[in-house]
Length: 166
Image (cartoon, rainbow, N blue to C red; front, side, top):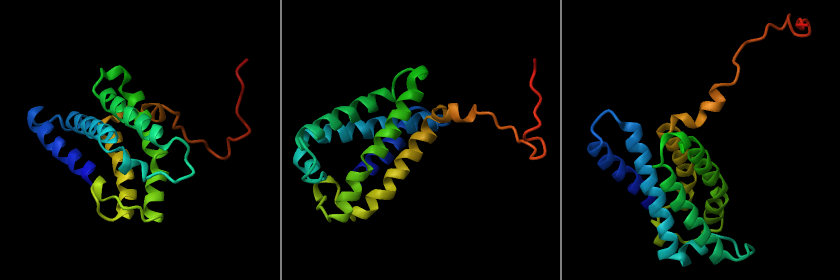
């Protein structure tokens, strides 16, 4: 829950600094800071994060360090110029989906997470969806490729009767 508190607090500060009306930019900055905070936390207290992985995961300490680096880089990536922001946002969403099983493991195995903000581990699960929604809101261009898909409706009577241009 600490990550969500960092996200909301940073959003409030960013919103005030960026001057009202730039709420998506404030949201992007807030997610960037939250991701960098989460990534640095992997280096400061790796043991707490290692517990989040099942015993069968090989090289758990290395996995935690690599995911910390990934989180820091994704946070920095949200601050880069607009032309690459969409790709960074999609990578962050993919990452959040990829680490979701660790949160499920923590809840199911009842792994203590006091050092990581405590609270009910089952509450971590919906927050993952909230973080994804936050990224999509803060970087609206992330879904641009999907919005560009053709949206024409086909008349069922026309199916199979299309004319081919020669």
